[in-house]
Length: 315
Image (cartoon, rainbow, N blue to C red):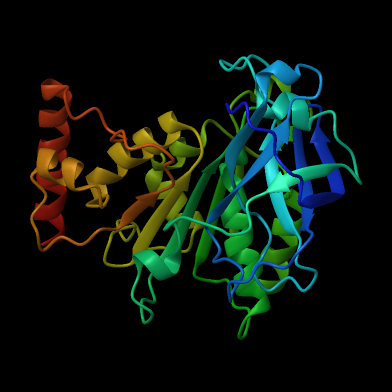
């Protein structure tokens, strides 16, 4: 929170409400971003608003992952946002944002940030499968990635597997677009809801998105993804996870059984990951707290043993 008022420099040019508490906003900056490219898929920017109802609270800013593709010609920035109903902050940004409509003014940082990108994590020649795991609005950077890939080169998305999890069917946003990309560009797209009993008519997958990697389900996931059983491994795939902290932690823990190791040096040291084992699981994170509780010695020992056994099987 800041008591300094922001000078608005962008306009909301489109708002799409997916549910009462989920919406996509396309924001047009007054001046085009100077960087070339404007951003890289997987990066985030920051938006801000002044609290006009309670000016004593000043302004508030929050980072938001970008859902639009860098190649989009109109220069707008698309953001996929959840309205936080019970915020911890006394000056919550999403409460202010939810009152805005097309034509409303907003503050938008004039550049993107972040290294949750293919360019920052993989060598250019890497041809492995890219498994994208999203919980809720963690879908945003992956929408940008597949949109961008579909617009570039031959638009072949057959090496992309996109998994999206939400509580309810209505929260599976971008479903029609992603299904179309599956039909036209070869994207492998899986959607799952964690509360299927409250979703009449839902006939898709059930469970949290990390449940695709549960020991009892991972073989089925491989079969549906077109992989030979046991081939979901760092030799053939890299994994990117974005969304809820619990989803990132559980996905990381489960995929240690397949030899996937994150780049965080604190986690690698705690798990005693050999130096010659490459990073193969990446996640978006706005803070500096390790995604696994490395201070829990009992849990870490179990994870260490699991990783050691996985690496022995892969050797």
